[in-house]
Image 1 (cartoon, rainbow, N blue to C red):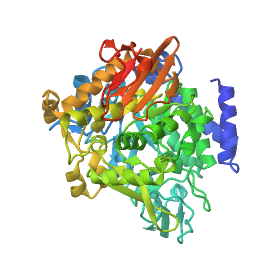
Image 2 (image 1 turned 60 degrees about the horizontal axis):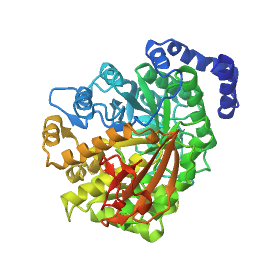
Image 3 (image 1 turned 180 degrees about the horizontal axis):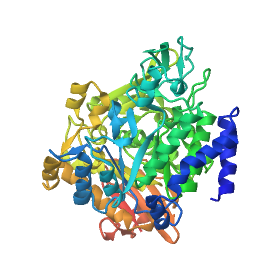
Image 4 (image 1 turned 90 degrees about the vertical axis):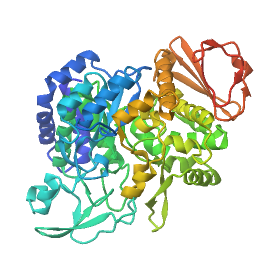
Amino acid sequence: MDERTFRRHMKEILKELYPDENINDLIDRVRDTLVPYETHRTILERRKKYKDKISLSEEDTILMTYADTIFEEEEKPLRTLHKFLKSHIKSAMTAVHILPFFTSSSDGGFAVIDYNRVDPELGDWDDVEAIAKEYRVMADLVLNHVSSRSACFKRFLAGDDRYQRYFLSFDEPADVSEVFRPRQHPLLTRFDTAVGAKYVWTTFSKDQIDLNFHNPEVLLEILEVFMHYLSHGIEFIRLDAIAYVWKELGTDCVNLPQTHEIVKLLRIVAEYVAPYAVILTEVNFPYNDNVSYLEARHEANLAYHFALPPLVIDSFHYRDTTILQEETARIRRDLLFMNFLTSHDGIGLLSAKEVLPPFRFKSLLETIEAHGGEISYKAANDASRSPYELNTTAYDAINDPFRPDREKDVKRYLAACAVALCDKGIPGIYIHCLLGSRNNLKGVDETGEKRMINRERLSFEALSRDLSTPDSLKNQVMTSLIDLLEIRKEMPAFHHAVERDVVSSDKRLFIMERKYEKKSTTAVINVSDDTVFLPEYEGKSDRLRNSRFDGNVSPYGIYFLE
């Protein structure tokens, strides 16, 4: 992108965001922020490597993990993570999403104290860069809020004039009854400041103070952080909680037009400075809201497929893929999603509630609770509460831990994981999904945090023993998933730009035909414990078994047919 085009785009966007500001001055300040990074060695090296474009293929799969999920005594967790990647993941995955590794005060790293400083308990920027030399790294741009212990909020509390507009605050409680609430605590939190009591906007917790993007100074600081991450070799930028960043009283304050303008601006900046960078939006809302960040083609490059996890669980619970087939078929083929079964958060329900019949939605909640999981709720505008997410590991969502059958359970679980590997897009596999982890009930009891059910920390030594023991659950699950990934990588029809068709079939089967250039593959997954006859594909080559498909789809069978 040339300078003239860049300035034209900036002018259009900044006029929408800040109509009362001197736009030319703002553009100049944006340029001043970017200049040091335009010639940065790390960024220039990656521009050359990726030929100034986004590079994704069938080989790309993203591991999602906290820096310290796997730990070893007397070793920085980022180094332990790097060791795990080299010893156990090897080439099966190409990228790793390291969840917030900055200094933080709460919420698993999402209450950032200092955006530029790696938490010294985890390691340092050298450790991040070492991983980035061997794997493509995703990092979180937590731009909706900062920690109450951050320097800028401390200055706000001290009455510093410069920082009074960095946050949304009121002298008296404002009417926020129209605002969408993802949590149950009050939206406005009272703080005593040097200039009197203030009621401050806190969407997610009292420790997470929302930034005020009505102030262009906030945007400029976030741009600096964005560039700083790129300079350390980060290639994927996850826009955390992006839907909430722009607030207007009298609205629901989610997915507002100005929010889209901010995403556009970040995309333009990325294309100008680091055109290889991939922007992923975290918009845990119904389908139309989620894809609105993709449809215009000049906002996000990638979005989470939030509807997929609950629909997969529903399909296996009912042994019926009808709804999963319908929802997958309606997704626009030119949109790119990250497909996953679970993440560090709970399994979002807003998309599922929109498409599942009420009795099946209720059954989904009951199944998770019957399997030992939890339900998290959000506050509604009428003061009631409604289900917001499922808190569970993927393995215990798919299987009943109180009626174990190891052989069948592992097959069922792998079949569920395979749906995310076969759908169009880029697979993302959370560390506890990769390992087939069980619900961490002890962690929930100790902390009172429901999300700890899927955030257990694991000793590297103990995990390595498990992974070298053939009959351990972790070995059986991870070895099988790694094998699937290695075969998937070798099949061009799993390219993200594939032409794909969901095949209407027996409700017990999920069938997707994929074609990329001259290569085609049919993925077949059985969500039931029945053998299903599928004569139309008989005789095709079964890549997973190195044999000819005989037409019989085994219980919880997975097939890549060519």
